[in-house]
Amino acid sequence: MTASRYRADLAAIAAERFADGHIDRRSFLAALGALGVAPLLVSGPAKAAAQEVVVVNFGGDAVPAWGKAWGDPFTKDSGLKVTVLGAEPTPGAIKAMIDSGNVVWDCTDADGFYLPILSKQGLIQPYDYSKIDKAKVRPEFIFDYGCAAYMYSTVNAFSLEKTGGKTPNGFKDYLNFKDFPGKRAIYKWLVGSLEAVLLGSGVEPDKLYPLDVQKAFAIIKEHRDQFLLWGGGAESQQLFREGEVTMGPIWCTRASVLDRDSGGKITWTWDHGIVAPGVLPVLVKNPAGPAVFDFIASTQNPERQVELLKLLGNGPANPAASASLTPELQKIDCGYEPNYKRQIPIDSAWYAENYDTVQNDFLDLIAS
Image 1 (cartoon, rainbow, N blue to C red):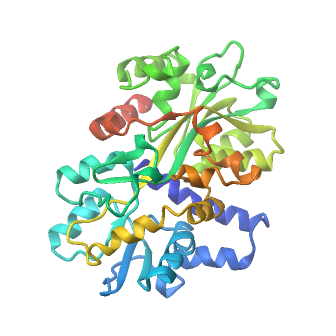
Image 2: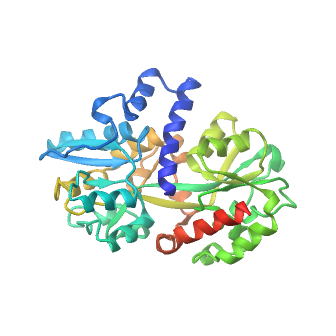
Image 3: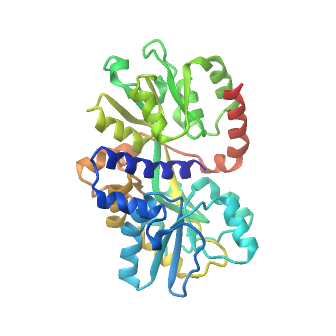
């Protein structure tokens, strides 16, 4: 899952920030707790108590961050305990748990395009929008079985030293090797990769979806020697830091780290960024029952969404949260309106229908 790799990468950023002195020992130990040192945060089976909501993400620094930004405030409001677990809540794991008849999770972290896959298998519940406020989410990220709890984006990062000080026109210059010579970064796990190639070939943003896979594959094959793959965030940074690439799609969290560490010599543009939702699907027969929807509704609070942005770099799903940011936080928020309107919302329906097949074909193409 694309978002799971993104979220796991946030833990790696925490470790790197501790190593270079940007966060203190206490903050780093909180991240270690998420990996299993702190008993209340260990990954693995956990029975939900009668007055408990069990929330599962993909681990790392996201565990204590979700607890601080979302869990603790909800407990203070409601008296209900929130346990955040780091695990592997993939569709396969969710299906296995439900098939076993021993459901211990209430809601999990997921990509928006996995909602149709999970719902068709009868693994998740329709959202209770009498509790969860649709007005606090962008319309394009509201679905029958979930809505955006936060957002993330794949953006075009670039080296000003290699571009001669020029800023590319988003992904429209991704294939402009004449004015921007040098190799291009490309993401191994698909999201943002085909979009960059198609936009670079002249496809207009409003005509981007459904993705023309065969056209994108033909372009990649034609320029095969110009692409350098990355599969994880640290690897994407290394490509830029070592001067191996001129530009390419990476996560906005990594782009902001590069910008900070290079003093702006390596930076990014929001133009044509592929912005996507992270969602919280609710499992069928969840132990906490309807209370899980009260918890999810509480995460829509603007202050709590801003707190998650500060802790992890995830963009608030609630536009009201983005509207309240300081200039420093506005710069890194993919959901801040002036940034958001320069981007392209991912087509979750297309990815739900095509991701697995196209991903496999993409890996075959780049390996050939």
